[in-house]
Every structure is written in structure tokens, then in C-alpha cells.
Length: 225
Image (cartoon, rainbow, N blue to C red; front, side, top):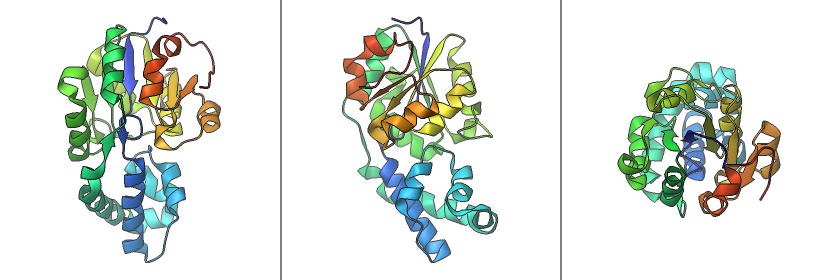
């Protein structure tokens, strides 16, 4: 196995099946504010970047300037209404256990607002499975800025880190810190786009990664399952 000391994991779309719920919640918020439809597919492509960036990325700078805070407020309410429908991917908890058994410290790098993160942390039993975690309150800049990853690593100490995430934004943030990323397809991103963003390996979901964990932790270059 590679000499990794820390595994930094994204939550939404990586461990929790929530990306499409977020996409629907954002879509409903845009519909209410703009009175016109923003394609959900376009929104989904932006899931994984911070909510402070998503409005402008999806709908343009003018919408952000005039309605950004209103859209974000409505998105929170819409997601609150369906968060109970989100579930962990199969073997998400086992993946954390497997990483710890391999000798890595586990830290969860979530950019969710605290009350949304609490749902996933509870399902993961994070108190027992992770050394630390983050929320949106831990960093001023959101993904693809690497600040949140820096904060996550500070919480568990120095060492060679590996990122595990489902979105190109995870890969881009980690690359800025020279951290290799294993991509998962569970959030809806494509294999090639994750590789093109710089992922060193791509697996289907937490279960697939767990089944090939020894291989994944020793990979030296791009690998696709």
C-alpha cells in the first residue's frame, strides 16, 4: 500500500446519496425566485462547489448580485424538506472502517451548512469512524478553493493525504494542494471527466472502492474500474 497517512473524504455524493436531492432543491429555489426554469442537469454539474459560488456559476453574475442570498435561503428550506429521504450509499460506513484498518486517519471534508452536515454525520456514526470533520463554517472560501481541505488536514495533523470525492470540484481543490484524488461515480459525474480533472483512479461507489482498497491505495497513475 502507498504510504498515506490521511484519507480526506467528501460527503455529499461520495458517502451520502444526496446530489440529486440538492439539485432538485436548487431547481425549486431558482423557479420560485426567477420565475423561469433552470435545467436541473446544469445545476447537477455544479453540485460539489460551494453554494456561495453555485448561483453565479449556474445562472450568471447578475442573478447572483440581485438574488443570490434569496436563492440560497430557499434552497436551504427546500433541502430541509427532503433531507430525510437521503441515505448513505451501501458500505459507506464500511469504507471508513476499511480506511482506518489500513492505518489512515479519516477526516470528512464537508462544505455543507452545519444542520445539513449533522444528518450525514449521524448516519455515518462519525464520532466513532472519523477523527474530525468540517462544515461550511470552517472556511471562508468553498470548493474548488482548497481552504476547506487545509482546515480538514489541520484537524488531524500532518501527513501524506489522499482525497476521495465524487465531483470535479473535489479533484480541483485537492490538486491545488498536490493531493491525489480517487474519484467515485456515485455522485453522477462521468469517469472521463474525473480523470480529465486529475483523478488518479475512478471507482463506481464506496462498495467498489472498498473491494479494491489495496489496489486503490497503491495506485501511481490513472486507473479506471
